[in-house]
Image 1 (tube, one colour):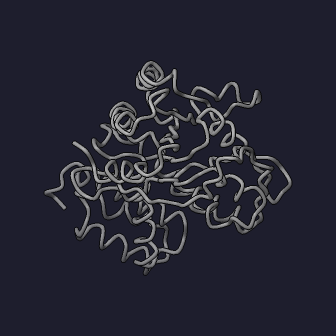
Image 2 (cartoon, rainbow, N blue to C red; image 1 turned 180 degrees about the horizontal axis):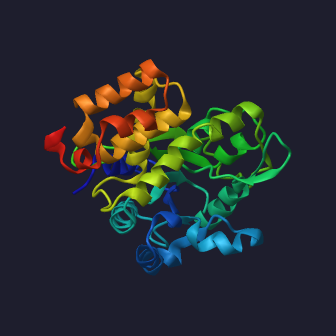
Length: 302
């Protein structure tokens, strides 16, 4: 089935015969067997973005740029989008349209993988991620970021809050400069404000990792981006109900991410929240008083 997004890509490519569709796939998001399948299917048309020798040990699990190889017709590029989406699932974080030859584009993108922070140190920058790219795009006044976008016609980024129906993901377009004559990114320098925007939500990512470890049976159909959006909503919800301490917000988000169906709207959770707010005690303590393990495994008792 052709998605709305796939049809939109084709229509954007139609008047641009000298442009190519490529995808950034973060290989660490795939299992070893899935990773091998991607390499077996698309390896001849794939280029590591972490091309620097210092990143040799990360290369196979880092971001790669894939394309349709020598097949540049509109139909073959459409087929490439379909086939990669089938094999890689949610691992593609970005779809790019550019007239820059794919191997050179991968080299260009790799130059943006190293950034200097406000502390003067160099850091590995996941510029292509759902979290980082919108922040960087909004800060094209900083050294190097406008250069990153120079050869890009369109950069499509998956939104963390995904579905528009039938499991179809939401993708947002960011316009580039469409300068195919430009290749290479000077050192990116992040100021304190940009640094804070990039790192300020580390709690959400830590909770997502913890949820993945605690789940006895992984939730089917929930990608990492959707889980991240869920955690962010729950943290915001915790703040709205009056929880001010980060530990309390974390406990609230973690509990409902794992046991929402059993606890949502039930008196035990309401009483635990009321107890925590009135007694000024940690939420973890009041949860122990009001919620038992049996409630978490038997929703009908809540």
